[in-house]
Length: 130
Image 1 (cartoon, one colour):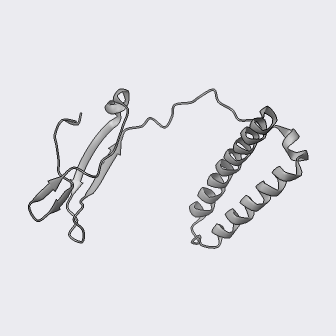
Image 2: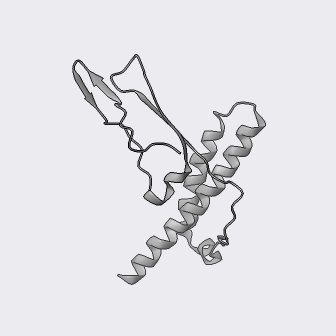
Image 3: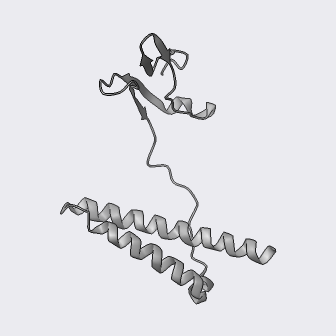
């Protein structure tokens, strides 16, 4: 367990010291902190903060997102998603030949699609409410 009361300075300039750079974490999640380090960085008056969390990646949730298929009949939605996906495809050109890069790009793209559909649905619902 990390001593959260140990005050480490992250900023130094001349005779001034400060704790300007920091991570915020919920009080009920502090047990997840495995390591917190302040690493001196010679090219700046700010030091690097390294935080390592112990997160159990095998936890499952009951959450399964399902696309509201009526959005596929909404031309504005389709245009919005098409623009987002076209932008996302342009990012693929910067990948290395590493297969994991492509898998990560695809997984991130799916997450972005879900988020955009959800955001669009919320905006549409708010417009209906007004």
